[in-house]
Length: 320
Image (cartoon, rainbow, N blue to C red; front, side):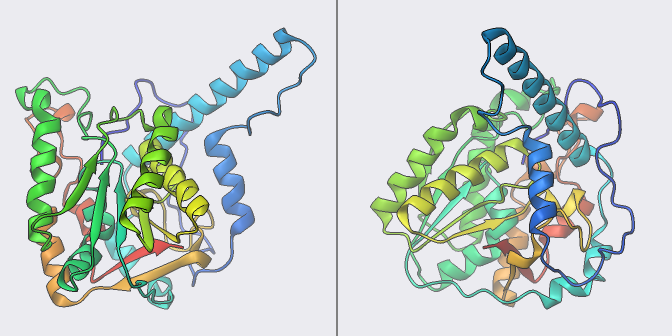
């Protein structure tokens, strides 16, 4: 994960986790989710009037401004106080989700930053390793922008440190010699390189013969996660390979029964005790994210204990 706080505050609060009647067992919310997706991403391309270049330029500027406002709102939703894990644990909806079974064969796992794949799918990675199922990992960025305002010396080495943390975490999961591909796309800029990510996923699907692609959820409200998820989804659809999408920040900004979340496509992945323990050990390897870099607010941990609690359950959740 990486810090997403914008440089200026939005005009109004973008997101709250207030109690609602939606806090019930999951149900179909496709229309609501689609509306919220549109609100986050701005108007669909190609809808600007075509009468004059001036009109097109004005429409483009307005769409850009709306997109910027949506990105700022998303960043502040992530930066705001989140939903406590105790509230998720008390919700019957998670226990009511259907259980998903992994298809046989190789698996390609995509991560926007080093740690996303462990937070969202680390328990299953441990179970895949134990079953000796071939796994290939695609790291889109090195996560070098997780602390953009910090002046600590460690910031200059964040890319190197985070790659090393990921290697240690994968060893904890039982992936001794993981097959990995690193794209080194700039952190916080994945959407500008989405075509490159899509092509890389398509190439790896062909080369590995993957029967499943696992990627960040494209509704996670983190632009890098969403771009990586869109790219993986497009490549998988073209290849006829199913894709499972894991949420990371959703557990923070969302709330039980949130109608913006497509609960009808969600599934549980139960972890055995060994996999759950391996995931806990693996997550602790990401010290640049779980511990402060220094004493200032700009050095704060990206994943404090209350945030980590969402990822220490005995199961994981994906959208299919």
